[in-house]
Length: 369
Picture 1 (spheres, rainbow, N blue to C red):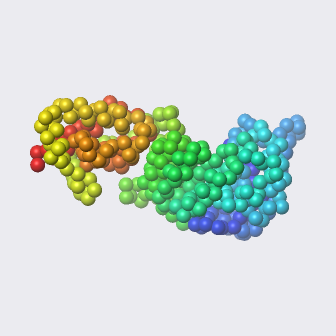
Picture 2: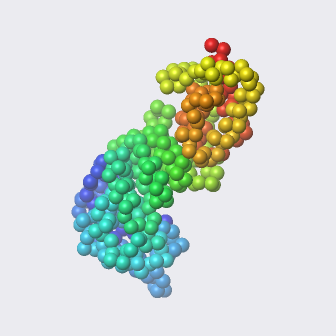
Picture 3: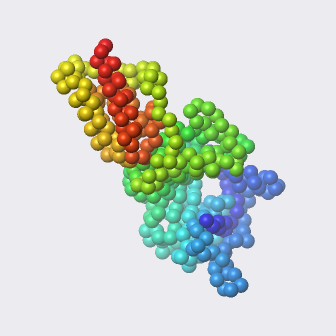
């Protein structure tokens, strides 16, 4: 990875900017981060060493561009075309531009941009739902070859699946906020966006926990040096088809405790076997229904990314379908929320057997009432 900062300084425009690391760092050395100036690295892509070779090489990795400002900042309008010229010259490099100003993109591109340059990735940030719903429709209608979404700092639960479902987003990154005044990042928000990415087949990266991280209702204060490491250790980053979710550690709930929690859920506790379901059980017997449960779990739940996940289980028509909703075994999202089985992994034989046992426990109990 390389960093190219052609200019430094920025202006805060949205909630994600409140605790900006550039402002924090500049303030610590008595500098005003709102003053935008060219840097000594302005022409870094053109710079060469004494041997006449470029200082930046493909081996240095992705060139993250304008990380202490915004590439589409108004103050830099006079300098940007020269930077585009440098980017055009260096088609051997991969440039990555992250912006909160995607609404200025169309007026800031070079004349020969066309439908985008293959060696340039544009990332639009969205720290909350309001920013997502404002920026992402604009983002998806711009001429860009490679698009990514970044939610750092993540300030609330995000629902971006309609945008991911367009097939235009190549990667999503989420993470918490660092710094002394960091706002909380809830692990549930991370999990929810990850599940949306899995359903749409989009790679997902959990970049950092942030300084104030909430998991299972408990607040953790995490040192800066551990925030990236802890996110990586969680295993919650996801690449389709690579088995990345297999590394996630979890513990299946004790079935008795699970039943008690399900009974406390207003939604789950309203499900009961109908007269038709009971007649079916009496006719077919529990052994046959168990075989059906095994088949349903294997065919509808076990894949890394089941077809129509979240909508694959009918609400009625078979005792097992009713049991799936009653026990939160109806989709991979519910399996993760209630049973801790991570989304994005192929269910093992042990996991499938556990689910079948949970279903049959409920069917047997409800049928006996």
